[in-house]
Amino acid sequence: MMKAPVGGAKHHKLLFPSAIALALATTLTSPTPAFAAGTRAGTTISNTATASFDNGSGTQTIDSNRVDLRVDERLDVTVASGNPSDVPTVPGATGQVLTFSVTNTGNGQEAFGLSTIANVGGDNYDPVVTQIYIDNGDGIFDSSTDTLYAPGTNDPVLNPDQSVRVFVIATTPGAVVDGNRGIVTLVAAAKTGTGAPGTSFAGQGEGGGDAIVGSTGADGQDNGAFRVAAATVTLVKSATVVDPFGGSEPLPGATITYTITATVAGSGSVNGLAITDNIPANTAYVAGSITLGGSGLTDAADTDAGDYNGTRIRVGLGTVAGGQTRAVTFQTRIN
Image 1 (cartoon, helix red, strand yellow):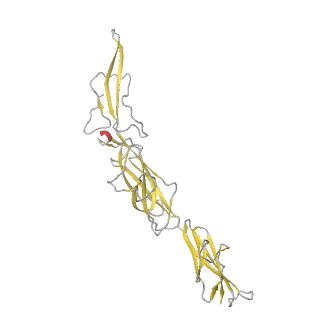
Image 2 (spheres, rainbow, N blue to C red):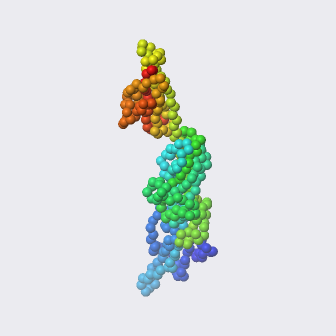
Image 3 (cartoon, one colour):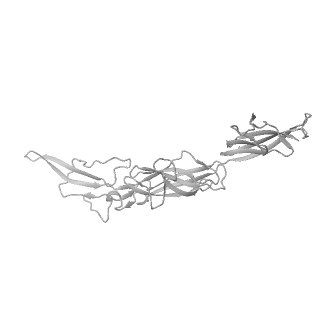
């Protein structure tokens, strides 16, 4: 049955040269590369049937007319988070990165517009999305080499089965607390159009055929999430006294041992933690008395964590994770 094009185009373009139509044997004449999404849009599928017979003059063979069918474009896309788990963040942090992969699962070259949703619900706070970047191909975010995305200007154009990595940059609000979770959704939508599966865009497919929305609706999406890993530090100081007579009275000549305990709480960690304490007036520092976790430290500013500079002691603790404590002691003598 012949089907003539109406208007721009319908689902298939069927071209029937006038001849004897015999559906006996089929021969494909245009093999094409195979994609996960199916045959490439715009490909012409052609076949011709043959018939053989003997009319008394020997065996003869005739061909049918050739039937040409142009493959329409299917619009499909998937988005997948590239983060194996929630990305840690801290209150007020800027430049936080979520990674996604956008894949053209349709069968034609297509441009995709990118957008984000940061208030999907089911979390504790809304990250503030500031930028979207398109990866330069090395898989590592670098604002100096990756491409800042501008909607409608540099929408990624992908061939069938081609993927591109996308980085979503966000700021964490300052009011969040340890353990809070914030979700960001990346959406990729076919520029040709989106809609219910089967929606047709006449004549807008690759190769001049129609573009048909596939099972994804042509607007895939996936979630990425930040989780606040904050840490707080508490500092408690105590003192014990041993006087010259074996008692605990703060008399001249008595030795004071100060203990300073730093406790880090939360699921995050703190960096560059250091304890500093000035030597009290009317006392003198006892040389070589600094300890960290019960181990002695030198007074000199050298390779160990402690030092005394003539007016104060200082112990550098470095990076300390939540749930850990560090105890520093030193001594002075009452003048």
